[in-house]
Image (spheres, rainbow, N blue to C red):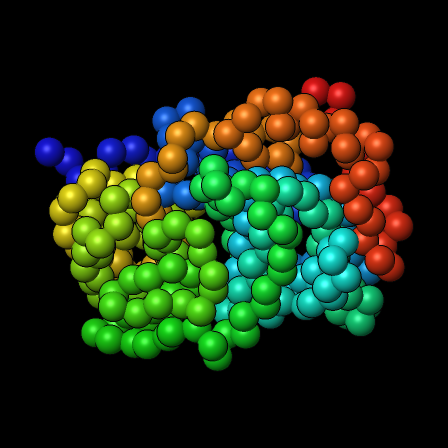
Length: 290
C-alpha cells in the first residue's frame, strides 16, 4: 500500500501585499490530527512602506500557531498582550470562548523593508476545551527542543516528537516539528501519532519512492514508520498531526466549533462588538456577508 494517502496542493489567497498558500482545509482532507487550517506565506520581499496589516478580528474554539522562517510579525490581542514574533519563536493563542487579535508589521521594520516567510496554522480544541478562557503564550526559540543529526536539523514547535516535548501547552496529543534536511539526507518518522503529514515549504522530498514537491502536503497512511528523503536541493518541511479530532468541526470565517449554533452566536457577538477590542488598534474586520 502506498504510504501517502493524500497529496494536497495549495490554493493561493490574496491578503493584501502578498499571497498566501492555503493547504488546509482541503476537499481531500479537512484536518490532520487537531490541525484544521494551514497557510504558508512567503518567502516575499516587502518594500519599504509595506508590511502585514491583518486588522483586529475574532476567533473561537481554536488555538492559532504562528511560526516564522524569516521576518517579524507584531501580535496584539484583546487580553492586552503585545508581542513581536521572530524566526524560530512560537506564538500560541488559545481563543477558547472568544478572543480578538491583529497581526501587523512594526513601524520601524515597515520603514526599511524586510523579508517575510512563515506558517500560520489553527488547532481545533477538544470539545471539552472549546469554551476555555482565552490565553496567549509566547515561547522564544531558545526554549524549544532543537538538535541536528545525520544532516537533519529538527525543532519541536509544539507537542511531542522523537522523544522530546515542547513547552507549549497543548490540549490533545500533537505533532508539530520544523525540519531542515541537507541534500540527500533522510529522516525516519515514527508512528507515535495516529495522524501525520509533512508539508514541504522549500525543496523536495520523496516518501516510499513518491516525490513531494515544494508547497505540497503529504498526508500519510497511519501505523508505519516512514522514511522521508531530501532531494538534491535539500528540503525545509513542517511535520504535523496528532490524535484525530473528537468529532467533526465547522469552520466559518475565523470561527471553529463542533456546533453550528455556537458559530451563529459568535457571528452575533462580533456584529455587536461583544468579543472585545484590541488596545492600541482601533480598526477591525467586519463580519463577512457570507
